[in-house]
Image 1: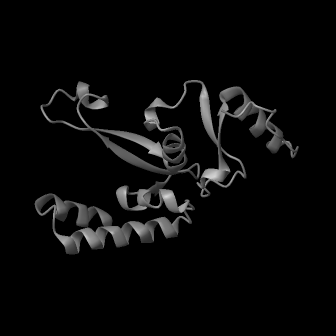
Image 2 (image 1 turned 135 degrees about the horizontal axis):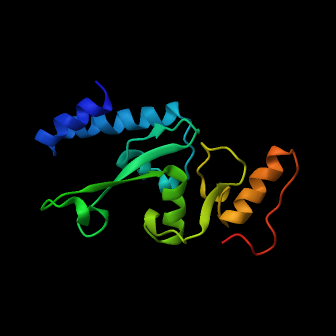
Length: 153
């Protein structure tokens, strides 16, 4: 049994405790396969989302968004849309108290230690796009880079 088949069965029986437990177990196993590191306060992300690993190494998921947000253009009554995002963006948005699609424009979430699996709050910072690119270029050249005082959002 995989996540997709359990999810399909849950559509017909959404309150089935056995299926809910099985889905939670499968999602935890998937997160462990990806070595997804989260703080305890964010562990519920594993149960609430199904993750996959992108080719670039980031761990991604889709968030179901109700009508009134991105689904407003879906054209169907009661339609939902899905917002594709990554684990580190979800954690940062939680830290800032905003939705993932409402992170400050012109900024990117950075893994301080460059480990894309390490999504603990202490390892994430919000940088301007320019600073994030400066950091990446410095690291490619093998240089040490430190964020200028007060520049991380």
